[in-house]
Each structure stands twice: as structure tokens, then as C-alpha cells.
Image 1 (cartoon, rainbow, N blue to C red):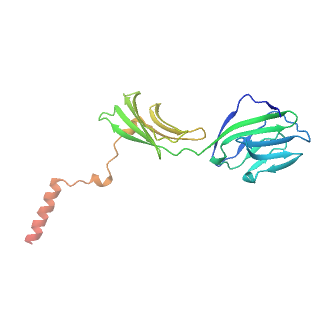
Image 2 (cartoon, one colour; image 1 turned 90 degrees about the horizontal axis):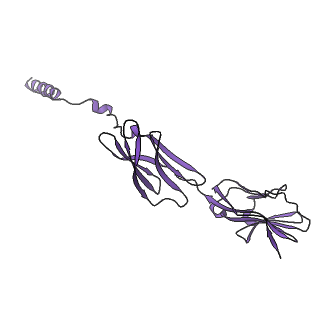
Image 3 (tube, rainbow, N blue to C red; image 1 turned 90 degrees about the vertical axis):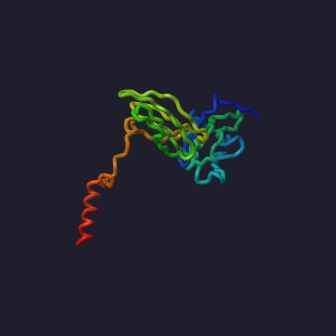
Amino acid sequence: MIFISLLSAVTPVFVQTGTDLLLEVKKPLVLKEADFFTWKVNGSVNVVRLINGNLTISSNYTSRAELSAQNHSLLLKNVQKRDSGVYRARVVADNNSDVAEYNVTVLDPVSGVKLTVKLCSSDSTKVTVICSTEDSLISNTFTCDNQTCSHEGGERAEIITPGASLDVYLENGSAICNHSNQVSSTRDIQKIEDLCKKPEASKGSQYKVTPIVVAIVLSLGVVLAII
């Protein structure tokens, strides 16, 4: 049995959990009556089979897989991480050939991030910020003057989710914390000038007890006691 590959390389595909994925057969494909067409994953597991015009969908993909009657592309619905693998479309005939091949990686979206201040100098010319996620954190130090800020360096805690990146950088006077992978990204942005601002005093702190007030209260207490 001879197999002819029409593919130069396997195409990598990254897709987010819970979305639909279309794996295309890009070149026109004409099947003869006796030809046998399949989409398989990881070389052995059938997803769909087409024999003499009769379509069979594997029980593992029932209601989740559709085969296009026009170009034999495969649609996978609501993909999960267990659906990751190498998908290959093959025509079994006199000269067997692979007509499509994809290396599919299904990824969860990345978690949110939070940018906080670790250290701020008294004159606000140096600020160290921490970018944190649910399972990792990174810190960077920036030195600023009245107009610009420069990056000094920082530390990274290597607890980052595999396949994801966590970065802190400076752009247009703002510190940016970015968490991303191949299918999603989240970020937190704060102006450098705002990072070192001290919180305003609460309303309750505006009413301070002064020595004069204390003296008046004590005097009234003595007068009332004499009366």
C-alpha cells in the first residue's frame, strides 16, 4: 500500500476551550465511488469515515463533529483539552494520500492580572510594581523623572502556567501587566504618576480633637460639677 503526502508540514493550531474548530481541506477533493476517506486523530482514532457516500461519526464525537459535503473539512464543536492532538485527513484509494494535517492544542483562557505597588520612593522617582495572577507573579522596577521612565530590572517567580507568559513593561508613561497565551490575554494598566499617589484622608480624619477643644470640654465639666 503506497501513501502519497500532499502536505509540506503539519499546521499548528491553537484554540480556546469551549469554542468550535474548523479543520479545512484546502485543495479540491474528488472522491471516486470506491474511495475511502477518513479524519483521524493521533494516527489511530477515527473521528469520521466516509465510504461509498456513507458517513460514520465515531461515538466519541457524536453531535460534536460535522463533515462538509463540499470540501470534506471537519468541524469540531465545543472542543476540550482532551481534543488536543494531530488530526489527519486521508484518502484511501489506488494511490493513498494525506490531504490535510493539523497539530491541535486546546488551551484554557488565561486568568486575570492585578498590578500593585511594592515600593515607591519618597520623591516618587522610583517605583517597583508587582504583576500577579492566580498562580504566578513578576516584579519590575522603573526609575522616573518629570517626563520619562526607564526600566531597571526585576524578578520573576517561575510558577507561570505552561504555555502562558507574564510580562510587566512601560508604555506611554503607564505600567502595563500582561498575561497571555496563544488564545487569550488579560492586562492591567496604571499610570506611573498614579501609582505613588497616597490615598486621600477619610472624612472622619478631618475632624481632629485639638488641645483647645479638650480644655473647653474639661472646663464645662468642672462648672457642671460645681452646680
